[in-house]
Structures are given as structure tokens and as C-alpha cells.
Length: 537
Ligand code: C2O
Ligand code: CU
Ligand code: CU
Image (cartoon, rainbow, N blue to C red):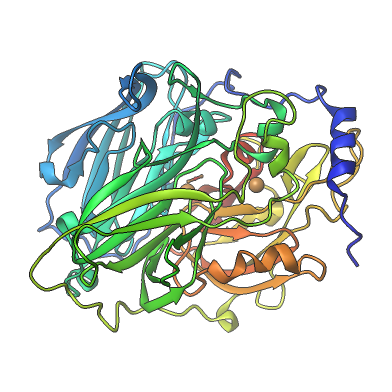
């Protein structure tokens, strides 16, 4: 039913034909004027307030900074500077010497206030990725603030324990602002998790993986391949962990909780221990699994998180372990970002990469054993969905050179009829990646069609994966990565491979209002692969 895909050669030929005629929102593009929130929507939550938890109030300033990332010249970055106005200083950790952060450490039920100051040259706004919060707190681009302005967040944290994160979300500027350094972690704990006594303190290690390209002056280079980078997504040639290149770290010979975020703009990782030891996964985007699962490798798309249990206690002091990204076949687009079109050099998706070197240090007391049972997950049931036989379906396709959602692009205030859901409803949503099928042809540019995975993200919810199906003819690329999916935990972002249909169960249970769903390849998002959906009461 799906015609043969274009070959690379076809693709390059077509690119030559069409190049130069398309202008997408690049970093220099000025977004349209923003409006401030007017009305606060009815807030509905069944979560009981916990008055014994202290308020956390933080001033967060987004601005420029310079840091010594390499020997020699310092690197200009964008950075959030935090200062705690009220509450415990331990709730906000900074990563010293890094553009990343801060790391919020929050308990479920806590009230959080963040006063965001914009000292950037462009508008900005913060989105709290994965959190269930009211729409005016969610960082929609229509709430972006101009340079010199501020925005006040005030919300109760109702999510379960897990590693969430935050980053800018201004119109067409999310990619560059994240790229130049703006992103932090929002780690929530709850009573269920605390009772497990998982590794904590120095044994609880957040690891943010990103790729960047630096010039000979140690400065970050964004979108050097111009339009190609925008179409494929930015792929850098240097891997950084928590903002550091060639990352290596001393660990004790003990058990660790490694919390990994793929904070890259568009790169997909196929994470593995270099020695082939299986990875032990204890959590996904929305927190702990019911019990640990093992994988030979983990596939992690942009925006996705995974937590690993890593017990080094049987390793010899002085030995090393290496976390790597295994090679996999490039998608059509990857090679195009590889400098073929001129511009800067980059590593294609699927390149073998070293991620992190761990040096095993001294042995400490006894390592905590991995709990057999980690959490209780309420299983959503397809039979309870209001549309169980009729999923709300979103086709990911290409029109001209732009990736679209149901043939639409982002419009600041628009919500289509089929993008409205009802508060309290459980729904089946289906993402179908039709790219490379010929399904998106047309529109002037002609036969542009490439095959790309899209990490699809829904704001304001956590969902469960119901089903994944791969279209015939797409199996080989799929099978190189599908063994690394973890499908049985709470998710807010799911990688939808070329030719794949992913069905998720999602309940819109907390707040009414307008939220976003989009591809978390940030160049795709900035180019319009994003839409509003609305929860009506
Ligand atoms: Cu982390 Cu709308 O994104
Ligand atoms: Cu989000
Ligand atoms: Cu995409």
C-alpha cells in the first residue's frame, strides 16, 4: 500500500532543485508579538494540598554567560541563574561550571514559585516538560515575555516521582535557546519512591546528553548547514554530558541511580554499556516502572528520559565502564547534515559515539540491592477510552520541505475541531509516521520526501503506550532501534519511527485549557511541527 521510498540519490537531486527557495524560522527570525495571559482557567485537581511541605520560591534569570568548556577561549552560552528566595537551598542545585541547570529537587505536593527574568536578547518563556500544571504555567509561546520582562510561575507539583525537565519554548526560538544552553532538570520525589530507599545523594546521578558543534574559537555553531539542518534537525559533532565534552566521572564501587535525559535538539541515542552488559532500566519519562527491565541497548529520542540501575560494587577499583551510543543505520536525512551541502561538519544520526567514561573508585560499605518491586502503575485500559474504536489520529508527513501534523503547521492561537478533548476523558491517540512513503508529496517543492523518526510529545499529560506497529517495508531500520524501547512506563514523549504507528492512551484529567503537542526534534518544532490542543470542561 505504501510505495517504495525515494533513494538517497533521488533525494539529493531533488534537494538541488529545491534548495534556497524555502525560508523557515531561523534563529534570527523575530517572533510575532506575544500576549500575556488574561484569565486563569478553572483549576481542577484531586490532589490534596500538603501544608507541611515548605513553599519553594526561586528567582530564575535567563541570560548570557561565558564558561570554560575547553582549554583556551571561554565559550559564550545562555544560562539560567537561580537564587532561592524562600525554601530550602538544597531544593535547587547548580551544576558548577556548566551551562545546564539548575536541578530542582521537589517533593510531590510542594508549591513552587518561579520568577523568570528575561535577560536574553530575544523573547522567552519556560516550559516544564512532563508536568501536569495549568495552561498559564505551561510555557506556551503565546505567553513569551520580551527582553527585560518577567513571568511568574506558581503551581503545585502533582506529578509522581520522576525526572522531568524544563526549557525555553518561545515561538520559533526553542531550538537555538536550548542549543546555547538553556535547560534544567525538575526531579520529583514522592512517598512511594522514598520508601524504597533508592541510591540518593552522590549515588543519584542526573546525566543530560547533548550534541553541539564548536568552532576553532570554542564557540557553539548552530545550523551551519542552513536549511538542511532545519529540515533534518541539528546534529553536532561533539557529545557533552551535563555540559562537559569527553565526559568522565569517578564513581564508587556501589549502586547508582543514573537518570538520563536526551537533551539534544535532534539526535537519537542507542545507549549501551560498551562491554555488552545489559542495561537495567528502572524508570521512564514519568517515573519508576513497576519492576526493573533489562535491555541490551536503550533507544532514547530527544526529550525522552530513562533511569538506569547501575551496580558497580563487583567492579575492581581502578577499572572503567563506558556508556556508548551504538551505531545504527542513518535515516535518509542524516548524511545530508554531514557536510555534503557545504557548511559545518556534523555526525549523522546513527554514528557510533562515546558518551561517558566511568572510573570505578573505592569500595564503600554494602551496595543497596535493587528492589524487586519499584512502584504501582495504574494501568489505563483501552476499553475505558471514549474513542476506543476510533483513535484520534495524527499523521506525520512532509509537505514541500516541512514536516507537518495532519497536514497542518503551528498557528499560535488556532485549535482545529479535531484537536479538542474533554476534561476527564481517556482517549486513544495515534501517531502515524508516513514520511518516506510518498504520502506528503506535492506543494510546489515537488517530490521532497525523506524518512525521519519524530519524537512526539504531548504537553500537560503523561500517557501509556498501547500499541506499536511497523508498516511492511520499514522493518529493517526499525529493528535496529526497536529493541531499545521501554513501553511499559509513563511517557510524555515517544519516538515514532518511519513507517510506524504508535497508539497511546492518554487521560486529560487535571486542567482545562490550551496545550501543545509537537515533535521534540527542536528544529522540526520551530519549523512548525507543532499544534495546540484544547481541553474543554
Ligand atoms: Cu520539552 Cu513542548 O517541550
Ligand atoms: Cu513538554
Ligand atoms: Cu520531527
